Length: 113
Image 1 (cartoon, rainbow, N blue to C red):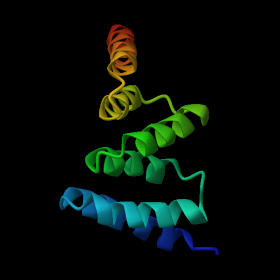
Image 2: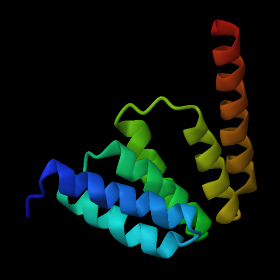
Image 3: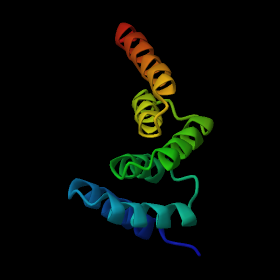
């Protein structure tokens, strides 16, 4: 199924609006629909991570984070999401490692700026 760019943008916008309204389950529906049509849509995948974390779906959130990292995503906040996803799964040591990576990258970024 093909969607026009305006339709894809609408799905993304609806997903973000649902997140802003405190409805991560509804946001997930819009964002997953967009990813079915365009699996490489990074903005939708990032928003889906937020929705999954709010739904406390740690395994699925970590899987989406891994996909973003594999695709070259370099936003340091992603490591905060990985940390939270690990924490939700009870993997505290892994959460700590991911959080330390976040802090290290943030420190490097601040020095560069």
